[in-house]
Image 1: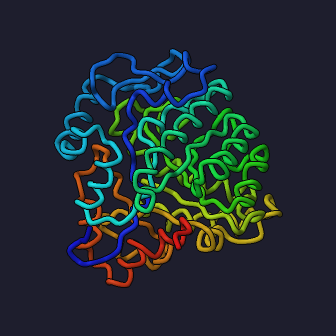
Image 2: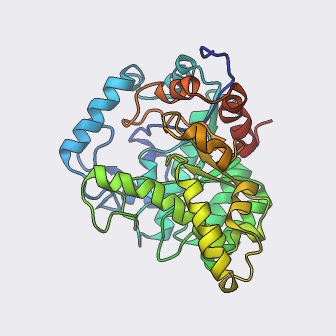
Image 3: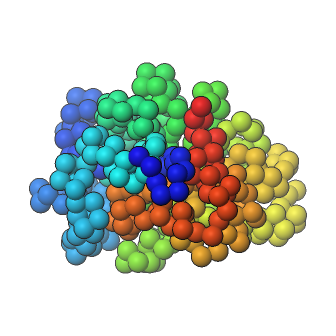
Amino acid sequence: MTNPQGFRVIDGDGHVMEPDHIWTEYIDPAFRDRAPRRAKADGQGWAQMLVDGQPMYRNYPDELVAEFQRRTLESYGEYAARGFDAASQVKSLDDQGIDMSFLYPSLGLGTVAIDGMDPKLAAAISRSYNRWLADFCSYAPDRLKPVALLSLHDVGLAVRELRYAVETLGMRSVMLRPNMVNGRSVGHPDTAPFWAEAAALGVSVSFHEGCHTMLPAAGADRFTTHFAMHSACHPMEQMMAFIALVDGGVMERHPELRFGFMEAGCGWVPYLLWRMDDLEYRNWKFQIPGVKHTPTEYFRRQCWVTAEGCEPYLDKLATDIGTDRLLFASDYPHPDHEFGEELEDVLKSGLSDDVKRAILWDNPAAFYGVV
């Protein structure tokens, strides 16, 4: 469990690969017939799923699924052979030199990402995933850390699931999609009760995008290839989530909330903060009188963002973004990264040891409340 340079490491954005059975075994019986299930049983982990009988992914051709499968087996075959179970998850941490990992969904990123879906079904799917994830992480609770999946299709149900995740399952971190859901952004006035409860419970809140899903997403209105859709949705939806939180006054009302922006790199941050501060807030802040600070001040006070060690400008931008705002993320076991390359990229980067130490441990510990 050591890496070549001896740093302690918290993975701020690792993933599970959910076994198919969890959606029906962990869901409330009333929703079992409508639970997520495979469109066809072909053994491919990233294959199409159905939710309430409808496809979960759009613009999702078989050749893309096959390539995802090939890359997954090539990079993570040893762990895939074990069904990506909890024991293999811990072994993957040992093999990479990671001490602790905060775990996000893979298939679950799409199961509640359907615009207009029955809010009660979305809440039931969230609960089934969260119940399973709590069991999964109980295998090694000091190393596997659960991040609860929540849906804002119905704000009242989201508040109920938030309380259940924290008070019953003992989770301290939650995730939302950054997208519009049922016509509402994450900063919409209707979401105010959710943010108040999240602040009261002291959880960290992450935003994590996922491509091809059935929510409105940047690029999905004009592109059909994974190349183009994936290029657009991850950074652009994170940017719009941040804008929505500032514009909606969420950060002003709840300065104690901690927000994480996952799996989009960090290069978008300086540009967006410059534009919002110098062009937009300076000229048009009269439209948002409840927003008392610049976007940069909000970001530096209560936001964190995952950085990829291979970002060519990382050493130049780290100080601009804030070296205490950057998080390490492995993205294990997703097919757009090879096993262990994310940590290797950080370790071999030109960042100073102090900055590496902050990214790999201090910052994710601060964001997630690790003591």
